[in-house]
Length: 528
Ligand code: UTP
Ligand code: MN
Image (cartoon, rainbow, N blue to C red; front, side, top):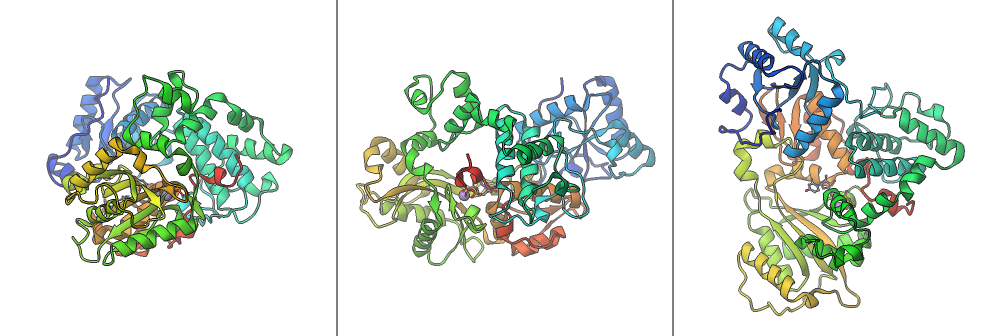
């Protein structure tokens, strides 16, 4: 058995932590984990000791700081299954290199860190459709222009249906491969009419090509139709349409024999979270797309409540989408530190005017973990202060029964609303002419504004590729808080998104070209 994924925080701050833990380490940017299975514990111990002697950092247990996994005589498939499991546990999205032991022995022989060559890599065979390099179209979504309106919906919706089906059956590698294929098709400046046009286009594996070919020949694809009519997939989609319900919950409900939302509601064994309760309560309103006009109106109203702050609309609307499932607002203040208390003040105002139907407040955890930030920064979750809300539109002043409450601190606001929510639900139901809208508020210090803006603009697939690009091509770690250069062992500062692109050596990509994946793409186009 391998040691379980270690989430233990390192004692000393930041990137130097690994070095500080291992004074003899010559290569601070490398942390090796030797996979024991098949090798045996004594050989593993011997190799680890040798590598340490040569100045390489070797981790005893797998954690987010591992950069290279090496294995000997293992089936690549087994290593990948294990790696995906432990990475998911650690919340790690950018996976380490997975290499044959020969890379490490070559490194030890030459006494330096050798570049990883393709022959060293243990390939993830579940990712059938591996991105291959092409001279004309780059492999990373952050290097391609992907507008909202592209020309290949017919194909991308089919591939995304397959991706979703793969996700529901927990085949993450396949899901990602289909998403990458869809994403590259979205960036093509022409409508695919013949399969030959796709020669040299990266990220299209045999499976995706087969699907596209069938769609070209017959106008429909059997496999896609089967996925779309599959009972489990249909039920999972319905479950996940409830706010707060993700893959895990939906799968559990399905496994428990539940098949509809009314069965879920009637089931005595189902325990809903507060967010899911609100998801059911406002189901109809939340299923209705938020329009651009509504989003702009909300943004203007929030700006009026916080006149000295910067309020930026992010998410899909910043990328030029006409409609979205929520409104994402980033709050900051031109003076560093001036952002502290902004959100509680805003929530207080909104609660006073009776606009808040639901709120889930999370405090900033970045400061606390900053000292261990290097470890944590590979996770995609950011640590900003935030509040997931459901607001009542229009955002007009309205007096609530809590008007006289002396709510001052954030905690009190949260508690007041929580108890109000549970004891006085009826007052929280939108009246005729009103509607409930999901609004997410995120607060960042001004020094992190560019990173937060870049991170919260999305799309998810763009962000994923940008981080992958930073890590694999530049040996940098990008998060919504910072950019860390592993070779220079330093944080790179930026005041604008352009500055971040420059650090990464990438041409600036306008938000309107970052639509590598639209979360609700097919539904919005009525294609599903
Ligand atoms: P959304 O889920 O709102 O996606 O997250 P979207 O692209 O705006 O799509 P619609 O239009 O609402 O359906 C917005 C972006 O915020 C980032 C993600 O990168 C996502 O692309 N995000 C979201 C985070 O960085 N952290 C989070 O916890 C949530
Ligand atoms: Mn959004």
